[in-house]
Amino acid sequence: MVDGGLSSEIKIIGIKGIPEVKPGDDLASLIIDGAQGQGIKIVDGDVLVVTHKIVSKAEGRLVDLKGMTPSKFASMISGEKDPRLVEVVLREAKRIVRMDRNIMIVETKHGFVCANAGVDRSNIGGEDMVSLLPIDPDRSARSIRAEIKKRAKVDVAVVISDTFGRPWREGQTNIAIGVAGLEPILDYRGRKDMHGYLLKVTSIAVADELASAAELVMGKTGMTPVAIIRGYRYVLGESSARALVRLGTKDLFR
Image 1: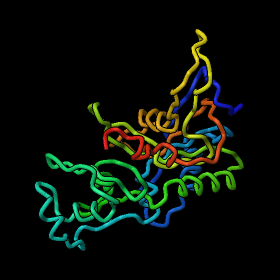
Image 2: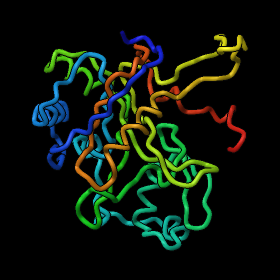
Image 3: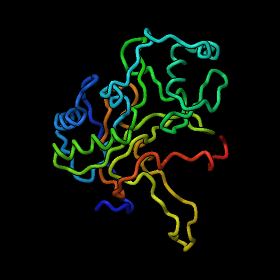
């Protein structure tokens, strides 16, 4: 039953063997074939966590820096960074939140606040190639979910993940930037704890927790861009990852 109740056991399965993704590739087919190649059957209630990198590749969200001419502003603020990369970051940004010590924190056009607008050089191929975030990660998640349902005849939830840094904490963790088929936040407000205390502010970002858990089997250097989380009793829903973005009016640090 997919109802948001506590799960006594959760299994995380990394899907290996998915080939290098190219623009125009059919991700649903690659995921289904990859699972079948491991003898794994995708079943109703599974959560598929898909790294944004293969979504960006399939959607052609790639830029060759060889063809990028940096603006005067990009050159001025680049410091130790490649000014061509800074130019791409500026084009993907809605606004600059903070620049200091060669770090650029920006708000993307999606509303995410992150380093370098999600522009990334890792796992792309080619020294001057970079990937951008999908234009609409929620739409990407919905598309993958619909195709999985159509072809594998199963109803799953899909989370598109990316790696973000965290204020006040060292290290990075994966979060959800796109969601389909589940409510990304489990709201405990109005419920009572085991001692009868009425919860007033607690809401858990379960989509982020699922993305982070999947990273434990996906890694950054292996060929495991998709993971299946099985056994988590999520709340069905049609919300989006935008529900996870804190509004500037509620943010004490912006």
